[in-house]
Image (cartoon, rainbow, N blue to C red; front, side):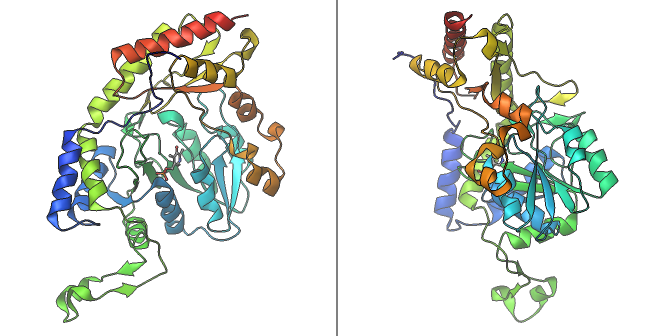
Length: 386
Ligand SMILES: *Cc1c(COP(=O)(O)O)cnc(C)c1O
């Protein structure tokens, strides 16, 4: 084992987050309150959206987003196969059908031509995922959606802060969902946010994150006072706590610095691996701002005598934590047995899955950590080059 260990991820939590949480703990108000409202306002401003609704996860945000769009049993929702469980499981919550789509071989984002081919009379929405933080071809997706009357819910779990043709990811589609899970670019431990420019949908999502409860305006002037509420619909328990929001507010203030740190690491990897034809490197599409949540290399298995799993094992021996994003949905037992999928149904994702490795990329990496990852990768490639 190597002396120098570089974990795959470490969250960047400083004294600001710790004292903000302490303040909330001492305040007497722990759950959803002023801190959540403040976090929502700051976040909406940062991503250029009119409304932001905080949730306790991105999965919850995706769920209430589909609910606000009126998704029903039997609807079809188009989802990339190259994603995490959450993107498609929320579709199943409605007894609607997730219709999987293959990915682009370079960006690993949803393939827009494949998307158009999957649209039917039952298709209600599409959920593009901005893979690794690289924005999807939103023009192509929005055009396809507009011509078939589909809603667009962006899974932006990787895409804070990302931009597309000069606009931040946050209000490009109908509703955009972010994740503040421990490994994401901004963390509150667990948490999420749904952003939109549509007031009615924002209000619906806000109510549904807290039991479908309403406190109508006239109540404020009635004798019923502050204890009165009405249940407008059977909602969920998806609200964010003030404890988590206090962390989020501090993380948001550091987001620019965090992005600079990840950009610097991506630039170092890109230049230090540029002479290795055995690796395909992730590049920023022209006109896009990449959040660099993930740095995913693709191994050229024809020019290497090692598998992807072997490569990750070798990195581990060298003290470098690595991961795989993602095992495509169609290769998982549930999707295989429910839909009868075979790898050939999504050839690009199936083939690419065998070759992808996610390398560490986070602000707490030191220059020595970055060098160690670069040297470890170069050593393994040199050792297993054909
Ligand atoms: C992390 C992730 C999610 C889920 O986020 P949670 O906040 O953990 O619910 C959804 N989609 C993608 C692509 C993710 O990577």
